[in-house]
Length: 336
Image (cartoon, rainbow, N blue to C red):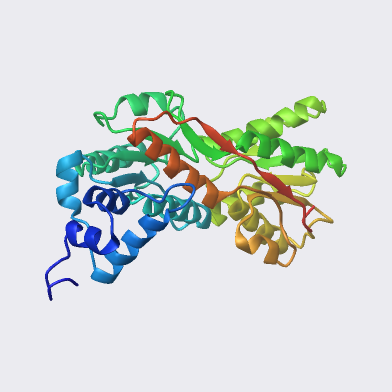
């Protein structure tokens, strides 16, 4: 560090790097360009690192009226998919020179409203919301966020907000087509919670494929649940305990639900896929390592998080942000 314990100045960094002070300032406060740093910019950053330079974020926020902080409201961080999505958000924000304030309230409206108010009070530059209930419009309109840009991730709203997530409707369609192509027509769906658009979109896509094939999905064969293993156990029992009315194949709208169904099938002495086929969603890391590897729809959780952070930063910088649905992929394994 320059001068013993004294922090180096921008002028000292600029002089040592052989650039103008304004150039050094710009390089040290901006994220890396898409085409990489120039030679002179790299030199500035190397000198700053050698001298132990730390930017004065408080002073910068007073000049720019920005805190270089993004707020994220995201439920169920114990869920591996949610955690991976958040990891993508944080990595993209960090690369852009932003920090992240995370709130993980319970999955209910009042708790989410309080979490959002707290983050707005901390003067975040933008908000990523992933814990929206359906319909999201009245909830969004009830929020007191001032001019803070909002973007939804994973779950979308009907309030005209830009959204980043997987193409869940297409994923549900792929799941149904996979089962139909293998000759399964006696089907059931464990549909997740009705307030989550991730769940409802997957069910809608599944239904659309059945409609095209003129296959009926009776109301009794669509069972609500939570996203957790316990939800899969409870719903799995409802579908599998009656030997006279057991579906031949089940689509679970998350892999954790599917794992719960596997436990029920085991306890009932049923073999997968011989007695009942099973298809999940998300492709969590353990899916391929289960005793019978799980057929699933792969959704790019980390990429969703990274893309959402970049889109929010577009809004923060005054640019438009388009709704983005990232492609999903059917991964066929042993359970079908």
